Every structure is written in structure tokens, then in C-alpha cells.
Length: 426
Image (cartoon, rainbow, N blue to C red; front, top):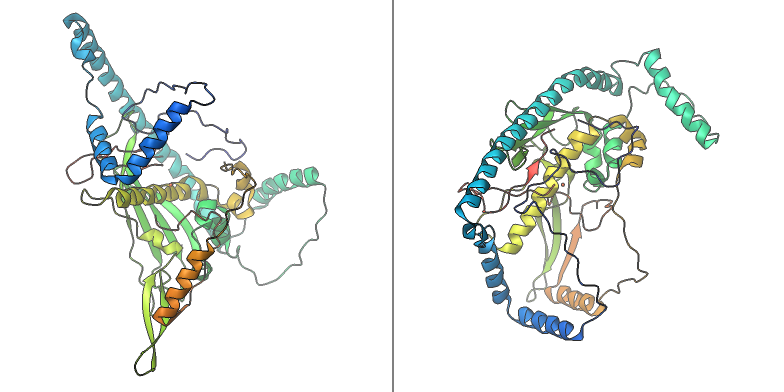
């Protein structure tokens, strides 16, 4: 359920059964490092160890594999206890199982309650869509209720702004969803200038619950120059079995195929390169299509890693899965319930932003590497001309649809043997 917009979210959210992630070790010792300014011998040992590991990457992999195999193994302490004590421990485990059953029932009732209120929200969403698309007008009572908030802000700011002149032929609220998405930070990072042309035809975003645990996002478009789809959907599925604490466990997502019109696919770009024959000195233009950043990559979600993939590749896919899921949650939990607050930008006041530390240092660019790259391009005698708009990224480390809640997968024979991330169904 969406949180009331009038209540600011606390800086640190208290753990609940809905937002507590799965963990192989739910109890933490929170051990602190010794309060010693410096120990030269230990520093030397660390430097020596770092040097050894840097020179022997296979040794690092072997140690990591060994440590991974030890996770979950008993230290032998429980087995060393007297039989009467072990019997009591077994009894506690039995009680814990009863607790887990109640947790699962609790989560199921929460889901049913959310569905109940979602049915009450739906008529409000439908009326919003009619007003946005010029098919209906708000009532005087609704306008009056909305203007009360505006009057309070005017009293606080005490500034006079020039009122815009009336224009006769404006229907609804133009670019409502595009503006709302661009104000939502995680989505704004993904939207390129090229995407905006297609997203201007977005008339509604809604969601629906599945019969089994999961939800579907539905993007409704008016006719446009880019694709023939009226509806483009993305569905998030959860596993049938609940996780630790009774939470639902995310499984995978499936996106709707976009039927692009000829030459209008926004998920690729055309690279034109001029090649010159060293013998004949003749030149030719070679064109090829390559994947590019686009919001519409959202509908082609990443696939879970396989056992055969290397650790680095697997880690990259997991990050993309994490991002992909969180994007879906942001649309479901933030954008859809409070679209008008994102359109006006008011919702930004209730967002939590990561603090960026500025230590005063600016990283210098490596001129030598730039020179080497320039020389390589001259040797190849090729020129590249990319006809693509670049996204206005708010976070340079954020890669659009190198597709946010860490997602891992349980060992069911088909998925990698990694810890499963519990995700809130709501």
C-alpha cells in the first residue's frame, strides 16, 4: 500500500515483515573493530596479503569457493550438547515452525487486504485517467479540495507569480505521465531524448494483481509514430513458496514484445562508419545496428544467471535483476498511486536521497589513455557517427536497463545456488 503523502518517511525505516530481506544469518553480532589508531605489524601483514592475492587471482577464487562451501555448516557445538539439551533445541525448532506458519498466514492476509483496497482505489485511478486525457472534468468539490493545498503553499511562500493566460484548445493535461516519470528519479535516469517522443503518447499507467503472487504493469499508449502496440505490459512473478519470515520471494519478470514500426526501434541505434581501402584508397559507408540505452529496454528484463557464467558476469546480472525489480516496485508503489504529486514534483520532498560526500578532490583524466585511443582510431582509418540522443542521467553509475531490492534465487535445480531475496508482494 502507498504511504500517505502528508507523512514524511523516516530517515531510517524500521524493519517489518514486509521489508525485511532474507538472510542466511539473520542474527548479527555487530562487532566493532578495535579502537587502535595504527598497528604497523598488521598493516604490513595486510599489504603482504593483498600483494599475494593480487598476483594469484585463482587463489582468491579457491578461497572464496572454500568459504562458500562452509556457509551453513555446523561448528559442532550443537552436536556436543547433552541429549536433554538437544531435545529442548529441537522443541524450539518445532515452535519456530508454528511461528513460520503464522507468518505465512499474515503475509497472505496482508495481500488480500491490499487487493481489497486496490479495488477501492481503481475507480479513482479511472477518473484520473479521464481527466488527464480530456474525457472528463473534475467536480467543483474536487477542485476546491485541491486548491486548499495550493492556498497553504502560497501562504508559506508569500510570493506572487504571474498567472498564465487561458488557451482554448488544450484538452486534459498534456504530457502528464512523461512529466511524472521524469520527476521520479529512478525512471528519469532511463529516459532518453529519443524516448520522449514515444512517451508523449502515453495516456495511462496502471497495474493489476495476478491470481497467483505477482503483479502486472500496464502502459496504455495512443497511436504514435514508433510502434503499433496500444498496450505494453510487464509482469512480475513470485515463487509459490514463501521465504524466511513468510515474505513472498521474487522469481522473474516477463516483458511484452514491442512491435516497432520500420526504422523506429528506440532500443537500437545505427552506427555509420567510413572505411577506406588501404590499397585502392576507395571509401565506403558501413552501417550496423547496436543496442542502446532506452526506457523501452524495461520491457526486455534480464535473465537470471546460470551456473556456467563467471562470477563477474553473474554479479553484473544480479545487479541488473535488482534494478529491474526495484523499478517495477517504484512504478507500482510510488508512481501509480501518487502520479499527480510526481507530475507537480511535490513527491520529491518525501524521497530519500543518498548523501554524496564531497572531499574536494577532482579526479584527473588519463591523457595518455586518451592519446592511445586516438592513435588506435587513426590506425583503423575509421570514423564513427552515432545518430542517437543521450540520456540526461542523474547518476552516472546508473545504466538504464542494464537492468531496484536485492534479488537472488533459491536452489531448485534450474536456478543458481544463491540466497533468495524476499520481496514485498504489496
